[in-house]
Length: 234
Image (cartoon, rainbow, N blue to C red; front, side, top):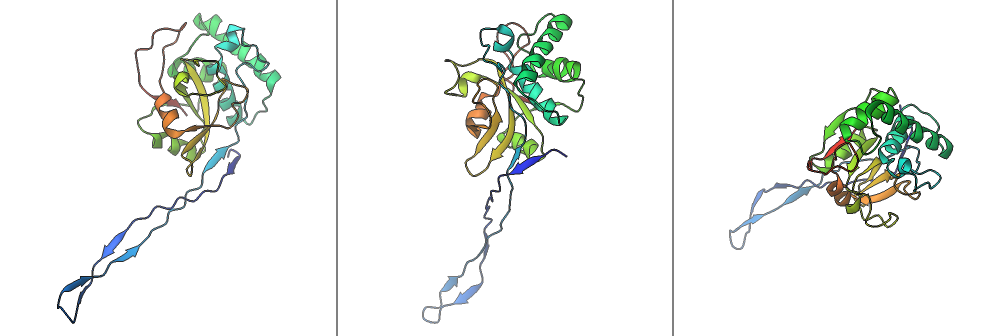
């Protein structure tokens, strides 16, 4: 079982049940309604998974195209190392991202942008040999929350320009990957590891902003994005 921390929030959901016994008013013989209100309380614990963070440019090598376009590799690296309970630091991340990119180049002819399905098949299954993974369509915010509540890391493809992250170089990456590691129900925020900035550890995006940014993109060197479907890797 994976290690995780509880943020301990309680969500109160009031379900109101009206029971209307009839009582006669002695003065006017009019019917008076009495409303008995019952509240039902559901407790939900928010989970923050203990997923290690690394930037896609561990030593800020942003001029190197391998690291500049390394968000898919970095996101997969964080999620798989967490699943395997392996330690991760900058030195390991630098070596792994380069090794993954070389593996992709040698076997598939490119390490540039990978779609969700190619990220799974080429990087997670192919390079890492990790098979306990699947792609799911995202139709609503709660689809993601359900996976987090099951203690599952979630990788999403996104239009980074819609995330409005102040630490991105403007206008932000049009093709991006990040790892969702938690959810804050009180503030309605997703907690993520965003490899696109060195300040991406436990970064928070509002649930609407993150959901609206989710968008798959084709594998290749910045190919035109036609498919607007939302997917996640879990």
